[in-house]
View 1 (tube, rainbow, N blue to C red):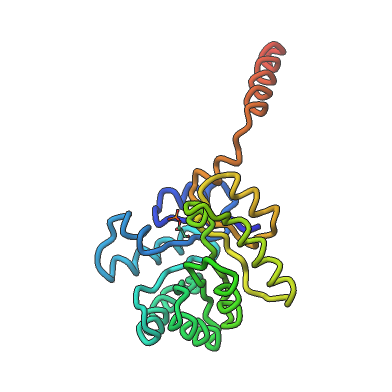
View 2: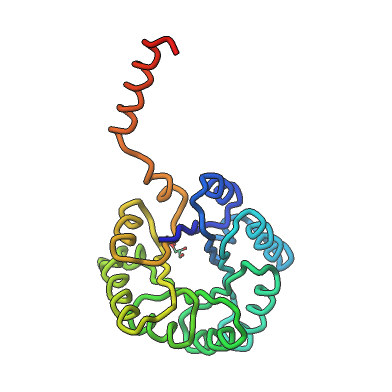
Length: 218
Ligand code: G3P
């Protein structure tokens, strides 16, 4: 399973990249706004900076909600850097825009997916990635992981190439369960990635090894 980090914070992206396990980055307008980025040129520059830090795909989301606006914005974003993936919301015009980019060989990430039907449509339009939001489903007492499982089954039935990008991942158990189910990618905060490191037996074991090593005067 590929690990993407879901942030527009350059320090966190650098930290995840330095760990050596990062496969890409996802952003959205809320995450960009959180970094206090203002104005079109600064936004475009920020995407360029992210692409310079990581080796993999970087999702940059369009703001427009008409097919013409999404195509215009998406083409501008895609022209920024070869690693840019155009992120498009799951609405009717979004499906049309995804199809447009598929025909042009430009990668897309279909976002705000909350049902199997939406995931099927995204795949039919040729989306590179489909992003079901598991945390937000959990927030409304609906098991987000069940959606990942169902989309996995549907995509497997037809050998669909669209990658399942589990989004709105909030913690380590989401990451582990996504891997068990067979999500192609998960995107989450740095805390969910670093949380995988933690085990008290590792800490206790290392403490004991270091104590014993000291007794050998090495
Ligand atoms: O990738 C989508 C993600 O940013 C949404 O996460 O935690 O706001 O539901 P969250």
